[in-house]
Amino acid sequence: MPDIRYDNTNHDPEMRIDVDFSTKRSGKSVTITAKVTESFLPPTYSETGLYYGWTLTFNMKSGSVSNSVTIKNKNEWYAHDEMSRTKSCSITLSTTSSSASVTCSVTTSMSQYAAGTMPNQTKSVSLPAYKAPTAPTTIRISPNPCAISAKPTVSWSGATAGSAGTVYYDLERRCTRTSGSWTSWERVLTNTKNTSYQSAVLSGLTVSGQSPFVGIQYQYRVRSTDKGTTTSSWKVSSDLSVSFTSPTAPTTITWDDSQIKQDTLIIKWSGASGGSGSITQYQVDTRWYDNTTSTWSNWTTTYTGTSTSCTLTLLAAIGNSDQIQARIRTQNSWSQWSSYRTSSSYIVRANQLWFKVNGNWVSGSVYIKVNGNWVEGMPYIKVNNVWYEST
Image (cartoon, rainbow, N blue to C red; front, side, top):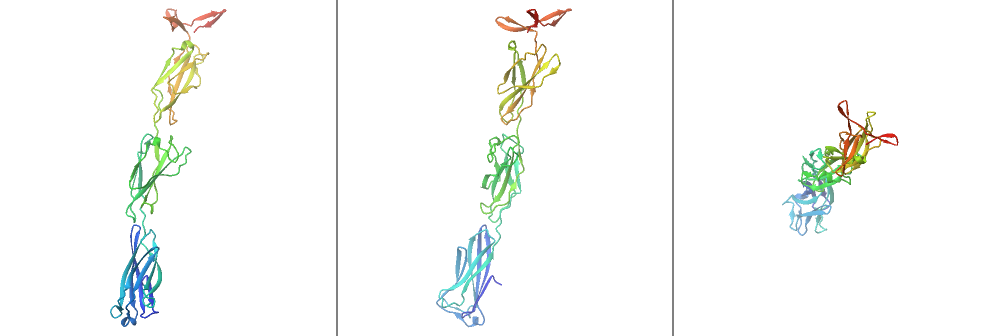
């Protein structure tokens, strides 16, 4: 059976109209062709003609698109000359739908001659499926892990074109927040034909308002599109880890006792680095060794700041041969701390005397010869009949 069949038996001659549809798609463009066959019905086909002076026209329409073709012009069409006539008529639609509603009719130029006409007949015509492009099969990020000071490259492959014949891509990214949740997806590329993308340096990259931090991770996702009509599903990358180089502690720590006469010691250090960031501060902890009890005190933070030296005030309780130690660590602009570097012990010599030499105070030590051997001695001063240790 044809897609549409209409028998006009109300007029002489009696006629049959058959319509068959064929379709062809090229991207969004679909051409629908109607093959129209109009025939005499027995017994009139052998003896009856269509007379001069009027036309029969086949019309087809879908939406706002229409076309028509003349079946019979003003010249006569006799049954004994032609038992049937076949014409073709086409319309072209822009659609991604799988069907279209087509209305057909056959009209006459003179209403009093209605033989061979057909009122509106509507048919839903199946259209070739519009195929979306397929999603990329792979998406890679290189390098992974990536240093915070580097630019990772995202690449993808494996997509195939759909009905449009061309493939474009949309690329998006997101990152973790300090809370551990993910940001919303942020568009990076739209309708690009490229199959790779190089990010900005990660240290300067902000995604959906989130700045980088130690422990941050990124994800990318890509999909295929035919530039706005249909899209594939998303292909999501594995997590991109970011590596941060930790700061390092000072390589050298020295003691400067040039001010020990004023009961202060100066600690100096050098050789620290900020790793992936810049140095923002140092932390200096100190502890004291009590020579009489052979015990160390707990570490106490003495200084935090950006200077590479600090001054310690000696405790009044420190005595001869007591010791002082310092440990120093570095923090960088990513809030990372280095490990500690611990200094050598500074031994307090409480038996030192101070002498003025050429206008400058210098320290000296007291030695006593005992049984032929020189040993360090401690000078005492008698004040109001009370002996005091002299330093």
